[in-house]
Structures are given as C-alpha cells and as structure tokens.
Figure 1: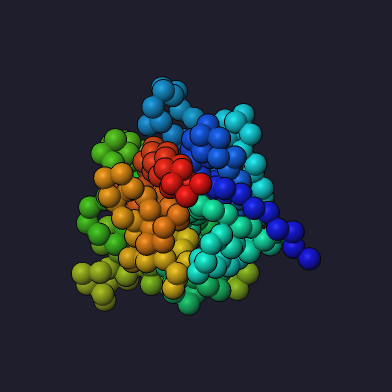
Figure 2: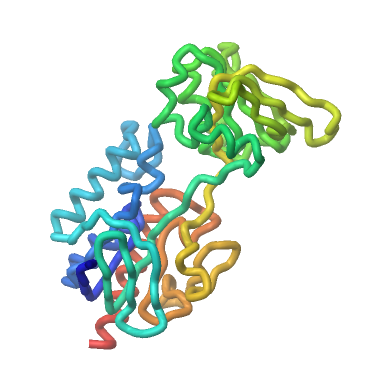
Length: 317
C-alpha cells in the first residue's frame, strides 16, 4: 500500500528548473518536496562539456553541475525523493499525484519534468534499439572506440556529440536533413577544424532511410538525399547516435493542462508568468519552453515558478 505524503509545495523534475525552484522555495520556508523522476539530474547529465554556465570559466560536465545543484538544494533542506509520477488528478485541491512509491498531495505544484530525446520513428530503428542505437554519446561513446559511427541531427546537441565522438571513434558520419546546421557558430567552427582531420564526414540534405544489421547489431545505414530521392548512399557504421531534438514530458498532464505542440502553456502575465491554466500549478524549464532550451533559462524559469508559487500560497493561507 502506498504512503501518502503532503506538502505545501511539490516539485516534479530534478533538472536545472526543478532544483532552482526547490532552492528558492526552501528559502521562502515553503519546505518543498522534490520528486526526481527516473533520470535524476535530467537530460543535462548526458552533456560532456558545459562552457556557458555563468561563473564557471572552466569547462564543466553536466553531471558535475547537477550534482552541485542537488547539494545546494539539500543544503536548504529540500526533501528529495527518488520516485516517478505515473498519473495525476488536478480536478480538486489538494492536487493528487500517484508515484511508484507514494501518493503525493500538495497545495501548489511546479512541473519541471523536462524533455526526452526524439527518435527517427522508422521501423528498422525500433528493431535495433539497444543494438547499436543511442541518444547519448557521453553514456555510450566508449563502446565505439576505434569504430565507425553516425550522428543524426544538425543542432547543438548533434555537433557536440560529433565532436565528442571524434576523439573516440575511427570515423564519425554526421547526417543532417537540411543544408545548414542550426548549432551555435562556435560549435560549427570547431566542427570545420575537426573535418580537416578526416575523422568527420558531413552529409547535408540527407535523411536516414534504413538502418541495417545482422539482427543482433547495426552494421550499416542507407541515407537518402532529400532533394533527389533516387540518390541513396550506404555507410558502414557500428553505431548510430540520434540527436534530433527533444519532446516535452507532458503525457500525464494531457487533458488536464493546456498544451501547445506538447508543451505546457503558461499565462506569461506580468506577475504570474509561469502559472498554467490551473491556479496553483506552475511550469518551468523545457516542459514549457520550446524556444530557448538552455540550462540557464531553465534555471531562471525555475526561480520564477518558485516566486509565483510563493505568492499564490501567501494568498490562500
């Protein structure tokens, strides 16, 4: 039988938004309870190098940054529970959230559940998941030392994965469906320098048509030119890293909270920027931000959500 835990302020998600919200909530004496989700630290723990976190002029890892945020939250006595929310009921107050370990009720809620990596959604991809397909070079790159790999995507994440893997793999084949990359210019400049080493090979205006293997592991891929669909290349690879973006983790809120393209809609009012369509429920980070999606902007909205929640609780108690 699940135990019931009640809190004034409940936060779900343990990325920059969640931890920042908990720090501000704790300092406001709201005694927040934070539910980590299955991936404590969020998607940032998969980032090998962070160079744009203000105050850290040296390179840091995502894991290091999230460990520091967790310790900061713990310093102010945030109650952190490793659990995963499976369903919610926002029809009445207090709000009810059902986890794998406990039932949680709360007077106010901050949703900071982040986003999950997207996949190509082609049949052969589903067959070879776990058999040579990954969404995290930092996690799985070591498996492909001196082997050939492909990276799919054209944003910051794809370029970062490519640069990281170029120090491990024999060859890295970067495949992007458009002519131009969306990544920051500094990353593209680094990519151009690395191309000279003849370890990185670029295919623009191409998509992955088929992932092939020996039924046990990936061995090669077919890529199709988006302009001339009759032009198909075959590339020998031992592994594939998919870096085509993320989708917000909002499935359990569908039908209760207003969503737009899967992202939680917030009011964005002058003094209540992070409130959802339900009074007392706020959203922060990548779960509500489809534009900026940076660690620093996630942390900022976590701060805003905590301040909005504090103002809300002051008015009801």
